[in-house]
Image (cartoon, rainbow, N blue to C red; front, side, top):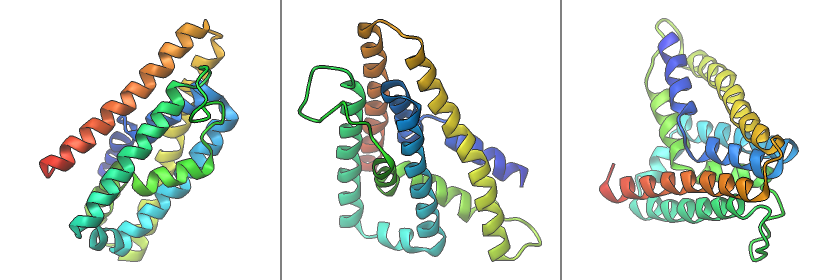
Length: 199
């Protein structure tokens, strides 16, 4: 059980689309928008857990064309979110950067987030709890997962909100937004590269 909890911690705290976009939303739009966005991420990640545990995700992702469509969709959506974070407060209106990502944005991200599926598959297909039935094991894993997932995302959100609260000069804030968006783009590039490489 300790090994499972440690795996959850290290798999979730490492930068991925969810935590990076959470910090970006907090820095660009503040706590209220960030909480709504994290709520969407939380609903989405638990929905992905259901898809993984039920076997639906494995069956669907085994079909090459669907996996390719999801890779393209996730890449485009992450690029869109990165642009919204980068341009928050900028005088560019073609993607409405003043409108913060909300609950539906977080929910949608998790459904097409490759890391969400990979993390859930690793956690729920491994780390068997001895002497426990499948139903009880899954329920306990979900509880442990959420007990770690929620605080980690709130910490990332608070980090973003703290940056916003520093009342930095607009050009400095804009550089921070670009930096967070750039980190998301690096994750996108890595995901695409791994997808093309078969990893």
